[in-house]
Length: 404
Figure 1 (cartoon, helix red, strand yellow):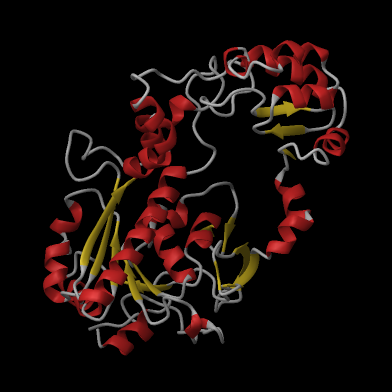
Figure 2 (cartoon, helix red, strand yellow; figure 1 turned 30 degrees about the vertical axis):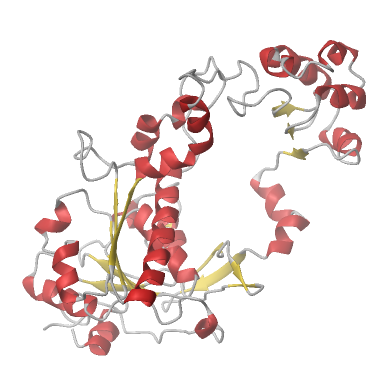
């Protein structure tokens, strides 16, 4: 069997850096084999990795994960997209050709020693590769196997591309977002991928607890569409129990189709101000708006007349800078916030106090600044030092360690 230094042309193996506190993380000792590409599956394995799991990423020798070339901008770092770096930090890369019988055999040997396998191929593909759940369960009965698809395993959409924007379109989320006259508005992020990855991580953790109790493995499944439907559980429950009545997006400054004025974002003289749930009478009193007096004691009108109310508020808010309004509203415990740009967020004391950035490096000297885990355990947020790998960077070491 050729190693990563032969057919796969891996670079010289760099030692794996292990942080002093790595053994104290909740998933320390858990081995995850990640067959996924793009975002949803790698996001799930990133969450598990941040909780202490060891993640071995399986990549094609000839190009690796397709997200290495999925550019969010014209910026690349070390030949790979910033997206790939962000979502694959601290993982190890094992280059395998899944159409090569010898490499499939090597992968099954690795799976036999793994705790978790993740895959996000289109339905039917993983079976044709001979790596479906039933096949790998025969190799490792205690295996926790996670599958992410676009739309589940049955129904007319199964064969459709499981892509984030398309899932948003089918889920109703896009239809729900934006002002009434705007038409459908997509979220500014790959929210379907991220939510499906987060749901998968939750399912994997539950299955690991089950295995600890019973010794039995599990097949955990979710999809982009299921994650987006769950994301809307509050508003869908309202719709399903309200005679099927559809929500009406506000025509002006809409921020939530089911919430009344003043809920929304308002331009100020130098930026924008978000105002959440607030009694209209109290807000009118603080802002000195007599035009709001007719609505003060009629909470039903805060919804039925929300566009009119929002325009009254907006006409006042735009006359002064954001800081002026915050100096009035915040001492009165009104729920409001300045809308921050990324530079403003990153320079804020509130963000700095969270300590959510880190610099990770790779054996070839590359370094990249990225985020840290959003989860703190026992008061500590995990920190990693290794950047996303080169294709097959750890192939030789992994083959030697596991006898592949």
